[in-house]
Length: 155
Image (cartoon, rainbow, N blue to C red; front, side, top):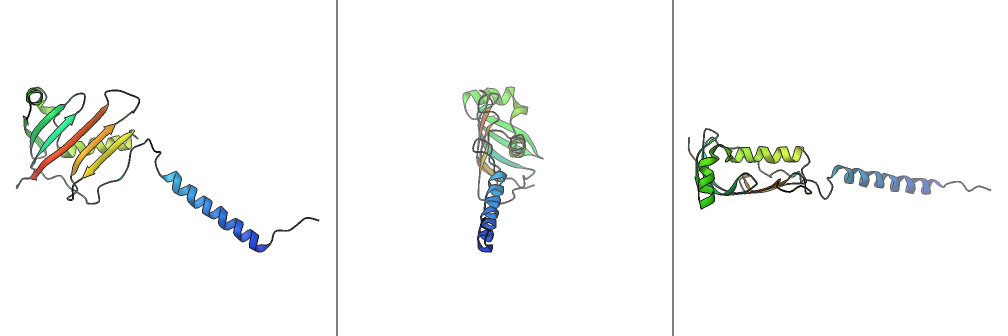
């Protein structure tokens, strides 16, 4: 004789199956442990047209500490604060990014599923640190940008 399923057992099985589907769907939407975080800042910071900040950069192209003055959305004045960055400020004037350009690079790294694309933000929403690594198995593609002494300018 074959045993039939009781209605209570069917409901319990359906509930368990539903819970598993929900749990699996939740897991499927998150990124793997090695991929970039996608958390955006809690506040929505908008880059002002004019401001100044200090950038400490460690990348293959740009390394050192720079005082940057941004006017009309462009790095208008760059001063190297150590020996290497003074030389780079002269040679690579156009390579020193604005904070907005750094955020675009972060967004691009996230959209390209970089292995690391992390940022820490200040209370007003501007980034304090941006860490990038497009491919953890490649060398010389890492970048770390630290932003300090940020001051919006009037006008």
